[in-house]
Image (spheres, one colour):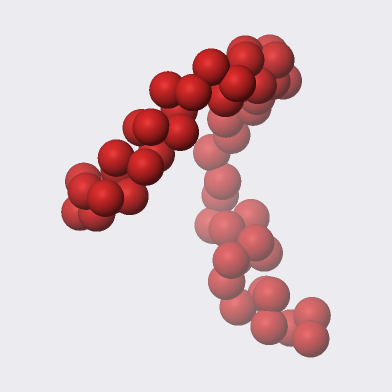
Amino acid sequence: NLADYPHLQRWFDDLNARPAVQRGLAILKDRSVNREMDKEARENLFGTRQLEKQ
């Protein structure tokens, strides 16, 4: 939660306010996919499954 880190929140807000960032986000808006991850997908990306690949 960025509210716990006010300096990081300010940086994030400043970055998102930049015109070039807004143009870049607009280009990718139609390609953005917000998928919910199930437990298996989360484990594959961030969990113990990553350690098995080493």
